[in-house]
Image (cartoon, rainbow, N blue to C red; front, side):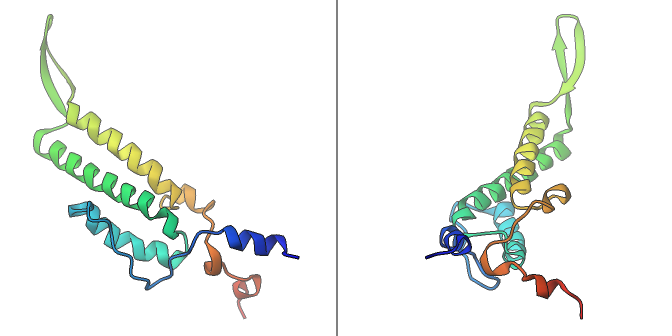
Length: 140
């Protein structure tokens, strides 16, 4: 007879251990690839990434890279533009600035899933052997 804990372990996704080499997908380039190389080892160390989540993580890296490009466009061109209308000129948020905000929101939502925001860390659960046993939490 299997205990509930044994059944739960059978259904846990394969954990990626610290030091395991995980190659990024070929479609990650530029700052998205740099983000992958920077963040993946941290996620491995804290035990919050599994093999089944790598595509989601890669998509988050891509959002980060796209957001950085949008930030660069805002830095170069400004966040507002002058638009001529029926009643004269007015300032409004530039389309690339709105795009930057949308990309940031998408990245931020994804980053919460991996516990990369302060408010989300409290709810992050580690996978498999990364969990500490209660006796390991005690200071002796």
